[in-house]
Image (cartoon, rainbow over all chains, first blue to last red; front, side, top):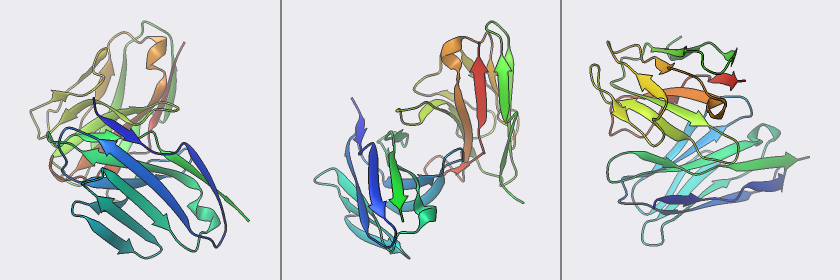
Length: 109
Length: 113
């Protein structure tokens, strides 16, 4: 079966750095996506990786290793507004998105 | 403002009743999707449409139906609601079926009693 694993919850301190990991086992691979979802709101797109390596976008970076079936989302200079759930999703060989359950990130002052 | 509009935002429904969740987008996206989101689970695809006039079944299609008569609208119908269909429903769209960047509506919270 297809599976996306990510931690259920993480806690970090304002101003610090946090890394959210995602491992996947899917039938084929056509890209990995990270979405942010604030409580009670819709998910919004953060990043996309299809080749190995690091993609940087402001305070957020996303890394991919296809051989290891592994990705992480790195958030720097954490702000209170970064408190949200972070969803990892992989596009399989049929171009269908397979979603992880999400990681709830709690930022403390 | 361009985007996706869902209605209703919230609804309480008696079991056995028929319900249609509406979804409209004005971005001229080809692909549209319906997901349900339940606590502790990832988003699960109910039905999708790669282009107007075509639809397909996702991971959890039973008890739901969709239609795609035109590019903009993609309603989701529960023919006879059951309590297990209590969930938050998200409609989403993408430029085409190969594109991973989805744009989501604000969600419809449905409670079936």
